[in-house]
Amino acid sequence: MPGSLAGQVAVVTGGSRGIGRACVLALAAEGADVVINYVSSEDAAQSARAEAEALGVRAIVVRADVGDEAEARRLIEAAEAVFERVDILVNNAGIARVKLIHRLTREDWDDVIRTNLSSAFFCTQAVIPGMRTRGSGRIVNIASMVGQHGDPGQANYAAAKGGMIALTKSAAKELARFGITVNALCPGYVDTDMSSVMPEQYRKDLLASIPLGRMATAEEIAASVIFLAGPGGAFYTGAELSPNGGQYM
Image (cartoon, rainbow, N blue to C red; front, side, top):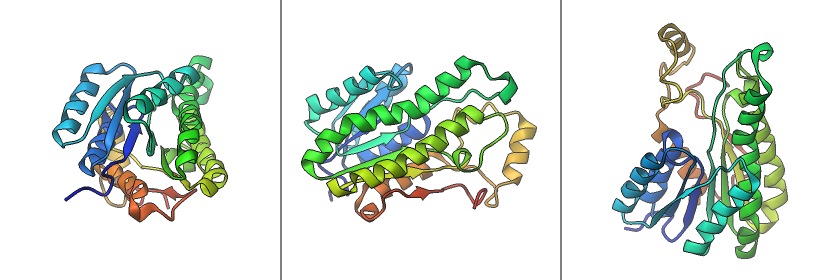
């Protein structure tokens, strides 16, 4: 039986590891052809491509630093050159530079804003013409709970993710008339490589602050992406979905 996204094409930025990889495989499992973007983890990206293709869809890997406008446009152009369309864009690329504000360098600030926020703007801008022409499209921005409530040591990350939420709302209002939905996913802490480096005591304290008592899996976050990209998400736009285990309400 074909999946709910059969015949569609999805681009996932930062798709080689963590949440991005889980999104790639979930989209492929629902029948979407996938474009896996990466900037440094080529082996992981190629592994994700092989797993996606094993699910019976077409998949390509595109190296592009999506924090750069020209590179972001090249990613979307590469997707359209192979598949002739982009139906789903998942803006997932992200990094963290955890430091207190007085210790943040200009480079720490610029790198996070560029990778986490500017990339979403550049990729969104690049997919709009094709989506407008077809009268449909789904854009899912992977923001963060941190962008909703802030966090010590994460001023740059919170600013980027909060900016992504605001970008989501403005884009949703602009693009609704063209049949394009834009939503933000705001996960709490997710058990990925990024969280695996936490000191043990910090991890214990963190888990104690989550009512459900654990972090999310990357696959659980990907399931929310599938909902927003699929038939069930058709009447959602400008929304913030918060899979965070009850940590922030």
